[in-house]
Length: 447
Image (tube, rainbow, N blue to C red):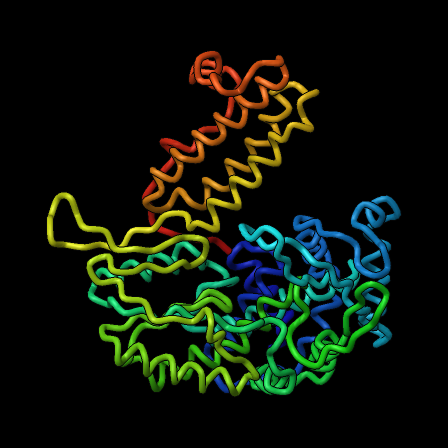
């Protein structure tokens, strides 16, 4: 039975749309036969329902134009249906060609003055990549292991953090805090294509994937070939990175799980061990596995951390993780987490920018309107943890910055701001408060 016919049956029986039905059919087929190679998947990428779903995903993420300058607003103005029909026609006819990525430098969060490269594909390429991801993700998801949490359906950063907490509280006090040097830009193309070919034999699909890998980048008018890495900033890049790093998950599970528990979120991962010698051996084995992918650990940032009795801590996914002695049961230490110093610097920078003196001519309500979405989004991520003190510190900082802005507006000295800009005054502005929003619940994500 073809995938389309099976998908129609699933769609009718399970009450899901055709795209979700196709994903379920591909996932179940891959799960039932771990050795199966899918030979007919390329044509799904050009399906109208797949492309419309891909367009919705790309549109939701917004993003800047690529090298051709075409924006989402421009496509909506000229007609999305026409744009997608032309793309589908090019894919079916084999005339589709990917354009180079437009490389820009964006600031590193919490690291003033430092930037990182970001590749921006053309809108046309982004939609095609998102369509390919919708099809391929279901196949490779059947192989991915529970050690992997990043950019996967029904998995989240909070689930990874919770897994770390459980292992650490069970006695894994030695942590290999690993940092991969330029992971997304260094993955070996041949190694990655061989891994993709383990599950996909469709030559058109493999050719399309290789074309994206080799698209090159355009920066300041100069074109550069890409000889390694995945197209950073593209919809399909996280999936390709997960396919590559599945080698680490698989090898670790099969040969090295006795050394400790691997927990990976995309290219960020840790190994929790019960002794220092095991953590040291874990580092050696991880280095050897990554070398097969053209990757290496950053010697300056990779370290072994001792959590016992709060001796040391480490940062992971924006949080700082550290053992703290229980006030209820003295002598017992439990892993806590709160926003890292970098995360605190990042939110302070955003608050400072939203309350800068250049906005003194605007009403305070305008400043609050800029602040609230930032504060709400930041607290939504960091409220799952032991962040009360950090949240109080940010609330105080927001109060202080708004009071300084109000003082400048009215020509007052900001030194005595607490007397005329008290908590009652702050409440009348409708500022979102972080204090009181902490919650402990089961970490989850939905697909």
